[in-house]
Image 1 (cartoon, rainbow, N blue to C red):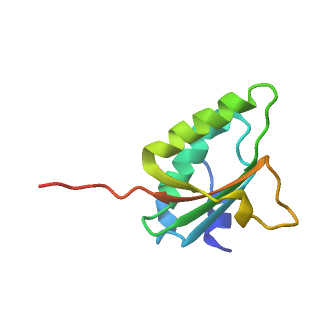
Image 2 (image 1 turned 135 degrees about the vertical axis):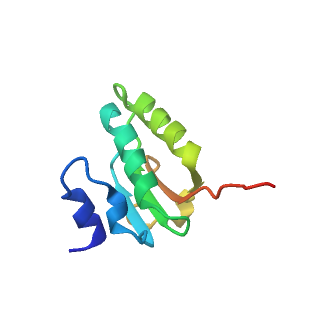
Length: 115
């Protein structure tokens, strides 16, 4: 069983750090639409990702109901701990390219330690 599957099926309350070392990549698709899931999602990413982990996040922008608020909150939470780089639309696969599909590459922020 791979690391991510182990984490997904791990009983509640157990620490994901049991599965270190951190993975090289985390792939996410369409995970941004439930307000209640945002903080647990970002916490899981924070716990799983190491400084060298690349997170590829793809989602469809939704403009109805609370979705714009949810997306805004998600990115506010992410930017506390992660550097985000948006993949330009021109670099998306030509067949699946769409104005409402967004792809980000994210990495955990490196802490600046000053003496």
